[in-house]
Image (cartoon, rainbow over all chains, first blue to last red; front, side, top):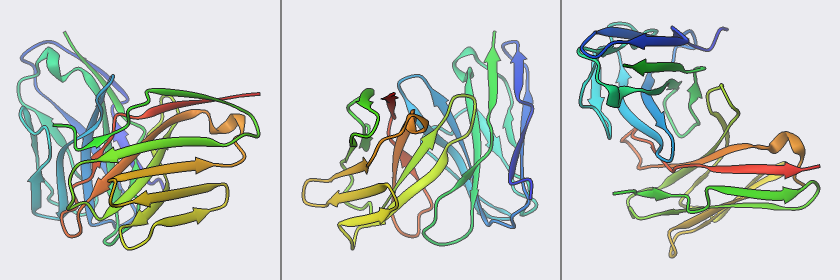
Length: 112
Length: 112
């Protein structure tokens, strides 16, 4: 099991560029989510999904889009990157029920 | 509006002593709480959790206490080891929502 994988590990964008952060899990987990981590702010939920075809907004969804066409993949799209989106992004997954989430290693994104 | 707060950004403890990390929440609908540990350049890893129907949960050196009336939980690590040096996040959720709200984290340093 690879667990939760994220690509790329590092990315530098210019303001206005678009990109997709990839997240995949091989544990057949129904629940997947995206967080951003900023200094002094902890982990903030961007979007989450409770299964293929079902997504919902978290605490800070503006500027980000998601879709969930398969159980395994949950990409995060930035349509027009802004410097305020400079952050470390984590993807997580978990099976149903009251269990902890498995996190990926993160993607460090810098928007110039 | 910070629904989950960790008011101590950092904590230093001697090896072998007890580490106590605190977390407060404001949303009375939260009924499940988790603690995660995070090393630099890695994703968080799940440590221990507690349901609101309990006031204590223990797993080896880690014990989580929940005081619902005070909306407060704490993580005790006994005895503390240098390998416990990391950032600890508490998180909370409400049954059926799959929305996990994280605190800002506490950096624990265990001194050898």
